[in-house]
Image (cartoon, rainbow, N blue to C red; front, side, top):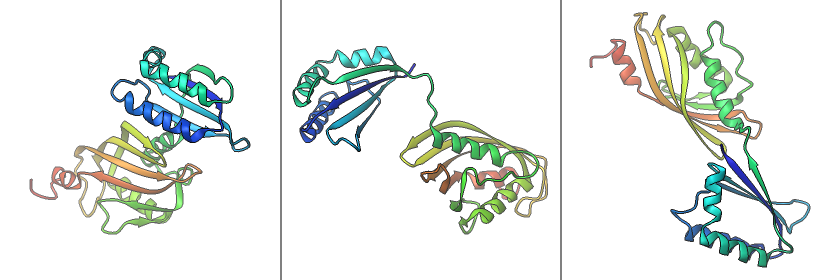
Length: 232
């Protein structure tokens, strides 16, 4: 179970504390067990700071705490603080990463049988889509729906999400798509062939959780070979 420690402190010597944290990170490279650290400053009190540190588990957090470098960090940190820092230990019971969820929702929507559902819950009106199957990029909701419609006309398909990585305003999703060629696709009459396509989709989100740009990557040539459109 993921474990999070929240460190709450006050200091008028933030620059010194920041250098202290940089030194600890350098000294514990290859030994520390923390996977993510986030430091925030109180907008209404410039001397109030809160750090959130994530660990794979409570046991891993304890291993990190027992490092000699961590003990020295604590002693030096206390000396820089205006009062004793407070620590809150939390077992994570829910971890919902909204951009990742929106990325999964998008793939779910475009694979929905029947009429293509509205996409405006996940796609911004002016979204810019880069797709290797398009000579020109798709710009705007109407163009994106037309591009998706081309695939839905040619195939019955469903996506499975294999892996996701989120960084800042971007999410990279590694996916598998199982599809049956049931209709006209780029001039190819239906063959009934079952195909499996693998690829990645990188999406850039704006603050409201809607996609403003995306980049698809998949083996278009391999797909056309499988459908008999080109010789292998």
